[in-house]
Length: 228
Length: 219
Image (tube, each protein chain N blue to C red):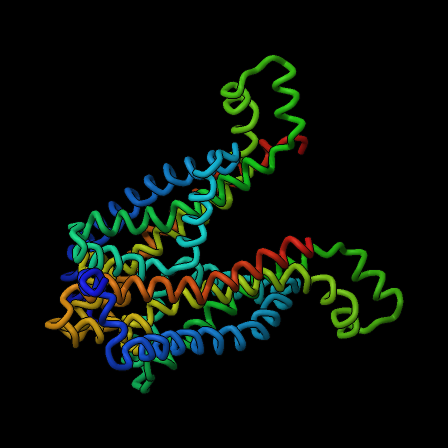
C-alpha cells in the first residue's frame, strides 16, 4: 500500500500542509471567479438591456465589443491586460486585478448576450400592454419583463460560473498563485523524495476542479429542466 | 510601435500560427469522431457503455483543458505512459472537445420527433436507412449552430498549448516579450494572427447556419 502511494506520487499530498495548500490555491481560483461573476451579472444585465435599444451606433459598438471578446482566447485577453495595458499606459496591475478585470469584461459580454436573447424572446405585446396600462419604462421592466426573463437566465448564468471557474486555471500564466501553481511548487519541492509526485498531485488538482464545478453544473441542469 | 520589429517577427508568428492551426484541426477531427460515437451510444441507450460515456462527458466538461494537459503531459509519464508534447496537445483537445461535440450532436438527434422514426419504420425502412435518410438530415441542421460554436471554442482553447512547451502563437508572444521587451508589437501580432485564424471560421459558420436553418422540418 505504502509502495503504491509512493509510485503514484500520492504520498506527497499527506506531507506537511501540502493538501491544505492545494485547497488554499483552489480558494484563490474560486474567489476570483465569484467576485468576477458578482460584478458581471449587473453589468451584463445593463448591457443586455442596452443591446435591445434601437440606437444604431450604440448597437454597433456593443456588437463589436461582444464579438471581439468572444473571438479572442481568454489567455490572449489576460496577456493584453497584464502585459499590454501596463506597458502602454504605464500603470501597475497585480495578476489578481488583471484577471478580475478580464473576467468581468468577458462575463459582461457573455451575460449581456444571454440577457439580450432572453429579452427579445419576450413577445412585443407584453411591452405594448404594459404601456397601455400606463406603466412607466422602469415599471415595465421591473414588474413585467424581468420576472419572465429571470427563469431562463438563472440556469445560464450558473453555467457561466462554472465556465469562469474553469478559466481561472489560465491565470497561472500571468503569475497568480492559484491551485496549479501551488501544485507545481509542491512537485518541485518534493522532487527528490517523491519523483512521481506529478501524477498524484495533478490528478488531485484535476479532481478538485471537478468537485468544484460538477455540483454547480448539476444545479444548472436541474433548474433548466425544472423551469423550462 | 516599431514596424521593423513587426516585420521581423512576422515569419516567426506565421510558423507558430501553422502549428496552432494544425494541432487545432487534428484535435477537432478527433473530437468529432469521439462526439459522434458518444452521441450515438446515448441516443440508442446502449447499456453499460452509456454509463461510461456519461461519466466521461461530466468529467471532461467540468475540468479545464490546462489541468487535463498538465495531467497528461507531466503526470502520465510518471506511471510509464510516455507522451510527446504534440500528441499530448491533440489528445487533450480531443478529450475536452469530444464531450462538447457529443452534447451538440445529441441535442440534434433528440430534437427529431419520435413520430419521424416511427413513420420511417412503418414505411419499411430499417434502422440504418432511418438514421441516414430521416434522422440525420434533420438532426444536423439543428446541431450546426452548437457545432460551429464548439469549433471556435476548441480553436481558442489551443492557446493553452504553450504551457506544455508547444511553440504556438502564445508561446511566441511570451518569448518575444521576454527576450526583446517588444510587448506591444508582440501582442498586436498575437491578436492579428488569432483574428486571421478565427474570423473566417466565424464568418463561414454564420453563413452555414443561415443556410441550414431553412432545412428544418416544417419551417
